Image (cartoon, rainbow, N blue to C red; front, side):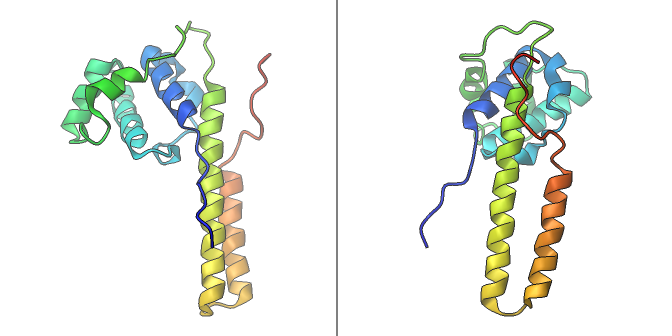
Length: 162
């Protein structure tokens, strides 16, 4: 079997993190996104630190975010201060009316695609190992698919006009 590349949206992950550092008021637009939705482990760690700061009503500027990540012991794992500060690179200045729902959608959509691939591969492996009946595998896969459907509330990419 050939090697597959898992779906990801690294640029959208960077843009979402960077935009929220510029304007923490955008946090609500990314409410559906969870740390586990990020493809890169470093982005998961950064998002988790942002969540913690947000809960404490602390701004997400690179200095405070870097300090939080250092406290968590993840400084080297995320690429240090230089990488955190680089998340601002290429991000346009956001107004209070900025919209990051497109970035959030792409991050969430690629996470769902990866979960679907994982569920499918697990179903295949369970059938190949022969320890489960087809009905058991179908039932388990159906349950996983229902969970994926339930976790996907936004069905399409937001229109630019909206």
